[in-house]
Length: 197
Image (cartoon, rainbow, N blue to C red; front, side):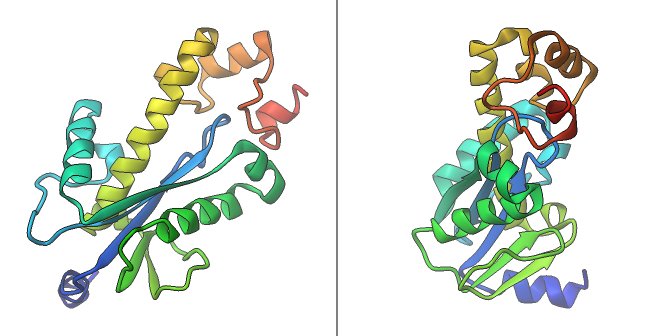
């Protein structure tokens, strides 16, 4: 991304950033967040959520909620993922997050290489979660929300180990699937789950 592009994005007063989390896991919703940051209340340390420690993410999560002009969470369920596939479900969850914003954005930047179907002007930025502060903020919100949901699922079904692997297809998760079978929250169209059904 050129400096000129960066300056252009940063000069947009109501710039929404959007990112999703949870394409790869075998269980749970794909979760998106959309955020419009407040230029008057800058937040230090925004970065791609995957590169931050859990402690740092949680601290930034609260700061983003406290300081942003508005934010919104969108999601698509395992049933929707199974019906329309994970790519379309990711787009649907981003669409829901953006349309849930209480302030109308002047422009939307999403992480990745394609935009969801929305009525606002939108651009996709590859690796946007490490380049655009508003997308970084969205990635942090989405990751903390989804991780917390995995911890809740862990409370109900500790034998699967969701608190540690967050639903990704780790060795521990695969062994638990073999032993205990899929839960209603599992994505039935994903191969490791579908072959057990």
